[in-house]
Length: 470
Ligand SMILES: [Zn+2]
Image 1 (cartoon, rainbow, N blue to C red):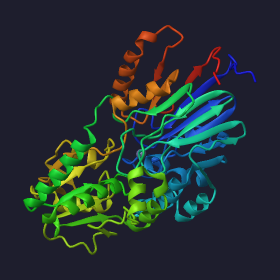
Image 2: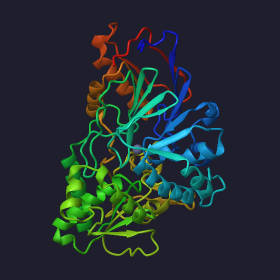
Image 3: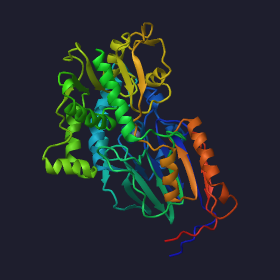
Image 4: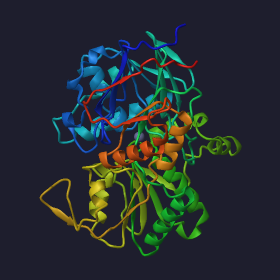
């Protein structure tokens, strides 16, 4: 087999979403007449059509396969729209746990986005019809579709998250999706694939920032919660219904077991998805890390059946007296239970809201970080609510920081790096840091190129005379 790539062929990349922004991830890659779409998300700061990637800018009928990295809304929530309301006719792949969770999450997404809105992207029927057409993949097993080969690797981040290594006519591309390299309570860290890609498409969420070490972070979180409760305040933890939420509940459940004085303080997990998703987490314990598998095996109990956490669907039966901790979705306080509780608790300075996820530009969670004096009521935007609640940010977002990202890039060793999934400033800083790290190779055959394309800008890379090592 001739491993030399034709000089005339160029690799093309276009971000229809997630280019110099966080949200509505959707990237197109093309090489030798094959077209692959990576993710199909929505933007959490917008609603309806405005939340979609720029699908009009590309002929979706030309897409051969669409790979979904994980179930988060900014990576998967426009999939039913793509499959039911565009000329897309390719095949769609995701991992088993992603598909299992995707179903419940999107049912909830349809429900939440259709409240008081005629601007919905798709219906429950669309969701169900598209669901049956989605194909699942196992980690580490290579699938070939029409000359395109791809393999899913563990990405950490959330249950079911995958990185995809894609190979087209000898050219290898690794797409990280969202990934983490820090051992969490329930997941393994992202793995380094055994083969080197020519092109790496990586997230840049945290840019050049450094994460606080895991133990310090947990300690800060539990101390803050404990001290708020002691002075009679309530604690609100806005979270995305799945992923970090379960991680936080594992931390709280353990902390409550070790602190008798908290025995009478209720911890609620307020999500309409809590029960359904527990089943999914139970089913896929075999895809989690050794700690969880060991607990599951030795104690014969499901670690996700919490001893101190009460699941509630909404606030109808929530008794708001005495200090409580509520872990509630959505994570960016756009609407729903977390927003309702924030508005209720905002005027009292004894209360605390702790932001543990990544807050996207344009959402209330992001505004809150600036400690505004007033916040707008969701039901009546004219009405402003005084904000005296204490605001803290302790990130459990499960994305790599600079140290982890640059180390991973070094291990993966690509020729070209395309940065996605980051606001333009942190992404720009990451690009500069990587360029200066690799500046010693400039002008040599080891030169590393770094790109940070904006949405809809076509990036074309030539792999002139490059020989692919097998
Ligand atoms: Zn994610």
